Image (tube, rainbow, N blue to C red):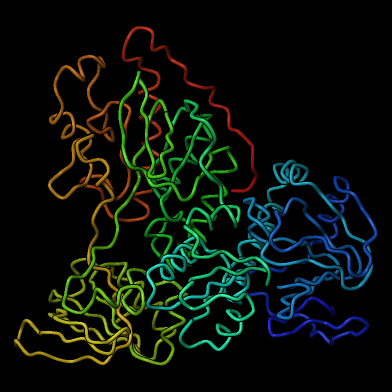
Length: 593
C-alpha cells in the first residue's frame, strides 16, 4: 500500500507535494508489521481515537517517547532532522502500523520525529495502558518487541541520530564512538580529516578543529567533548538511583551473567539494581552472531540478545544504570557498600559480581598509537564499515576470534586469521572452524605471531614470524582486530576479597580457604558454591575463577547466583539481622521480555 515502504535515501517532502513512495518491500527485520484487525480492535478498546491533521507532530526528536501511536487512516512520516536543512525522510507508515522503536520501551529519547503526512485518524495509548494490554496478549507483545528491535537496528544502519565530529586520531573521539556503538545508540561519525561535512558544521557552530570532538543533534544542540555520563544523560540512559537506600541486591556488571541474575532476582521480588561501566552486554554484546546459544537455532546477535535481556530485566523492576564505574567494596553494618568513581555510593544486603573480562591488549612495537583508529578489540558494525576496501587481520584462536572473522568477511575483501598455535581445534568450536575453512575470503595462518605494527596514524602492514620456519613476513592489512584472551575487571576488588593469581574471583571452598575460620563460623554455614570470601558477595560468569567462558555458562551462573542470594538473605548472620527477604512475587514496572 502506498506510504509503507522504506525510503532511507529520500529527502524532505516539500509542502503541497506528494512524493511517489513504492509499495511493499521485504521486511527482513520484522520491523514494520501491519497489525491484523483483531489486534487493532483490542488496542482500540484501550486507547483513544483522535483526528490527525497534516503536519501534526506526534513524537519529536530528542524528547522522551511516552505514547504508543497506531495509524488507523492517513499516513505518518518518520523524519530525521525535521525542520532543518538536513531533513531526511526515513519511513512512511500507513494504516495498521504503529509508531515507535526501542527508545519507546526503555525510556530513551526519540531519534526521529513522527509527523502526520496525510490527514486521517490515529489511536493513542499511554505506556501504562500498553503494558497492561501486552501482559494479557503475549502475541501482541512479541510483535511490538520484534519490530522495535528491528527498527533500532535499521536506525543504526541508516546513520540516524546524533553526530560525533572528531578526528580518528583523538582518544576522546574514540571514547565517544565506542560508548555510542556499544550502547547501540543511533549516530553517525563525521571524520574531521576526511569528511567534507565536518568543515561546514564547524563553521556553522563557530568552533575550531581544536575544540573537537563535538556531539551535535537536531542541528541545534551542541555538546563539547562530553563525558560518557553526560552523553548518557543527554540520550536518556538511566542514571544511578538518587539517595543511598538499602536495596536487596546490587549486581555489578551487565553481561550475560549480570543480566541473567537481574532477571531472576527481580522476577522473584528482590529489589535489584544493576550498574555497568560502559555498556550492557559485556563481550557478548559485541558479537555479530552467537550460534551456540541455547534456544536460538538460527543464532542471535549479541546486541539483540542484550536488548532482549535488558527489557526482560526492566520488565520485572530491575534498575540498570550506565555508566557507573565501581571503585571500592566494603562491608558495613551487615550490608555492603559499593563506591563509584564519581563519588556516589550504593548499599545493598547482597552483591553479585559479574564484571566479566576484557580482551587482553596486544603488546608489540608500533601498536599503541594505532589503537582505536585501526587496531580494535571488538568487531561491531561500526568498525566493519571502515573495512570495505582493504584486507584486515584478526588475531586469536577462540570463538570470539572466529565469530569476528566470519562477520568481517561480509565487509572486507580478505580476512587473515593469525593463530599462534598449530590448529584451531584447541579453543574454537567445530561449527566455526567449518565455516572459516570453507569461506573463500578467509585465510588462516597457523604458527603465526605478530612482531610489529607498521603505520603512521593508521595501520599499513603487520610483520609476523612463522614459528615453524622462523621466517618473517609482511602482511599488507589496514585494520587489526585483537581477541587474544581476557583479563578480569577486578582491579577495584584487590584487597577486598580473595582473587586467584590471574585476578579472577575465588568462590566456594577455595574462597573459604582464604578466609579466617571465624568469619564462616559466625555465619553458621560454609561458603556457598558461587560465594566469594565475603559472605553475601557472589561472583558469576567470566570474572569467576574457573568459570567456563561461554554465554550459556554465564547465563546459568547468573541465574544460579540468585538461588544462593536467597539462601544468604534467609540465614541471618547475627542476632538482630532479621530475615527481610521480600515476597517472591514478580514486579511489573515495565513490560517486555
